[in-house]
Image (tube, rainbow, N blue to C red):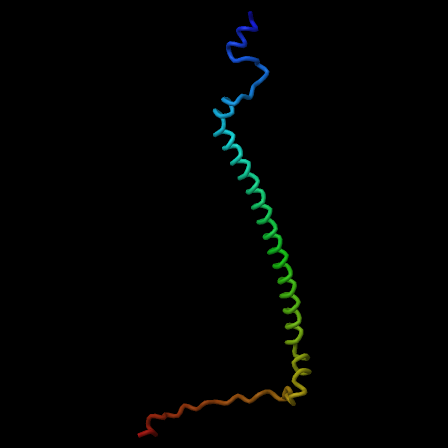
Length: 114
């Protein structure tokens, strides 16, 4: 008699997934599928962002090394001995005596213009 009662109430209890149950829960399954797709897309986006960030960091380091080497080269070239050596082919030299400072006299130019 128990077997008849089970069959009247829905049949075998071992079969859980039925067509009606699937249709009833289809919106939830679609929601789970959407969440899965968003989760995967977010992972790909994060990987790409990380790759771009690492590439930018490498580029910044390379530019920093280049800046430092160019700065040290420029500082070396701007030393007095290097400037003198570079100016020799142009017949430029550093004078032995100090430069002469000119003094400006206060002449009233307005009276001479009249």
